[in-house]
Length: 185
Image (cartoon, rainbow, N blue to C red; front, side):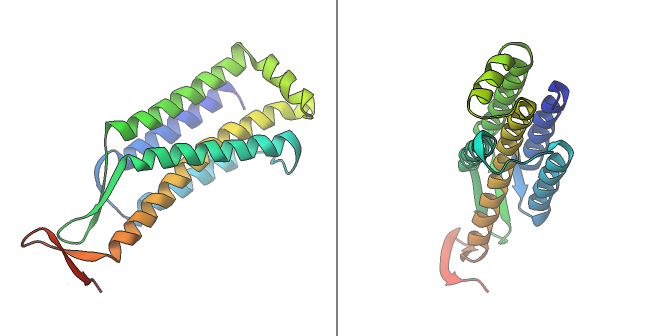
């Protein structure tokens, strides 16, 4: 993947995520589907070889793990609540945005560093751990790709799960803004 492609992925993920989530937003399934469509597009556009063993698989697994942690950290800073009219809303503020901006900046700096500063050292390190020289670029691409995609997907799945939990929970009583203990049907 070229540096331009890596930076483009970072910009698309950042813009789509913050555009979808920042501020007060009514929850709807379109937001979840948009995440899935964007992630599918990124994988189909930039993914080429997926590794099933060795250091390539390890890099993909680490990318997934890091992405899940970033997604979970970000969504832990988002509030999901039920309004008096029983609509589910989310609120994501500065902390939420900071996590996504930090991820985009870190991924961008890593991509720039791999291009200009330490790419040869990382390539040598990967080859010493069993990567074929032609696979080095693909392994790094997959690490970055899997990290970005799983961060977005884990965020989407947690938002969906929290919204589903609220949808089946007790209704809000607008008269006193307390929770009625009878489940809504």
